[in-house]
Image (cartoon, helix red, strand yellow):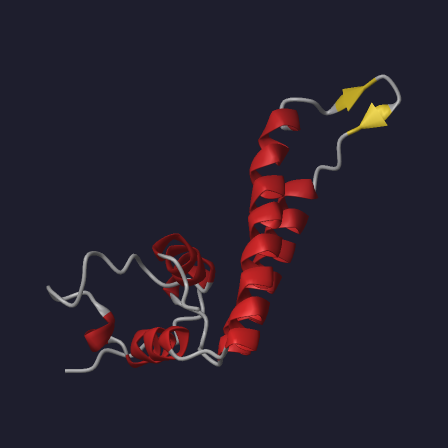
Amino acid sequence: MSFTDSELTDLRRHTGYPAYGIGNGGFSNWRFYQAYGMLEYRLQRLSAAEEAVARTYISTLAQLEQAVSAVSATLDTDSAAAWVRNARELAERTRLFDDWRRRLCGFLGVPPGPSLGDGGLRMVV
């Protein structure tokens, strides 16, 4: 069974790669990045067991991403009664989320994409 379009979008996004678009047209698609091409190749050729693991990553990352955005609900509170906000919560949750994104990259065997800040992409001319 192959991934749905939504799952592929999540996998690309979580591995730090830009949107794929509607196909192999234009100048910013996978053909111009060796790592992006490798990601697309691997996503299309995973075994059923590997797809199941990737889907587990998608599920875990969705929860972690939601937790990062939920932090915004308490950013305006520094202290309330006995409860005191963890001032580092956003940074800690973001770091945990990015750590799991890097684990997904490791599982797929691709370098983290540009949105993960590693700069591991090279332009193929």
